[in-house]
Length: 335
Image (cartoon, rainbow, N blue to C red):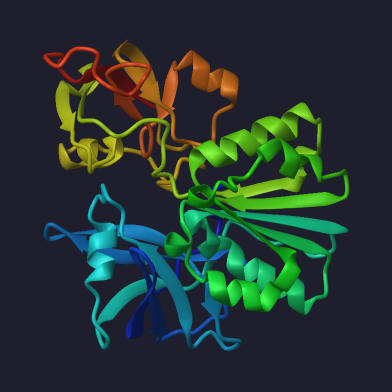
């Protein structure tokens, strides 16, 4: 699901920043080469982390018809690699380098029924789709899942816009989403679009397959930063390059290897395209697969991994069985 768009870089001015939920900042940008963002679009944006320039991707929540205003929303991640911290420090008037809107999560118009599923900050990729489907008078249901109402961006606005087409599930209120019930509402004429944490999306995909629904009708986008276990520091060894690198909690394996001078192949950096795949030669610990590229069987085998998002942890529970235990160690061979 890697983007096939041609990147057109441009300058953009920050014209507004406002908090829209706990830890979530709404940022309005005015680009110099305006282009309307279609539903499901994202922009790539250059951020500065520890004095080095790198790239991050953010879904476009809203776009003016002429593309002169693009809205993104950024969650300040507790274990941020630096991108969300940079974004939360932006000031009105500051200039950034961004791409024109890119598309790898398109909304197909014409389905008989739509299920839109957003988990947490995943609403940024789904909100524009819901707005378009409302304008088109399509048959749709928007399902929004979150830990608490305070952490759910745009909840009041979405409720006002979509009325009873919006279904809200809040963990703190004991109304957590029951995935089998959600997927059970789909039939062969239903398309389901989802964006959210890997656990939520994995549960939906499993149920979708179990019900033998048409796989092309299940469409998704992920952030590539949510996993099954809390991130730990681990060691990656690359015998072919004579490298041994420590990967800290706040860095990906791909970034740590790049920092060490390794030339790596990659594209999406979100665990979707598989271009950064590496072969696992030896493993002391467990792989926390955070991609949506491999099948469940491939992830279980753990002979390969997407190094842009997946990590190693010391045990299958994601916690150290022995306080004196060292970090997990993984030996790989790049493709």
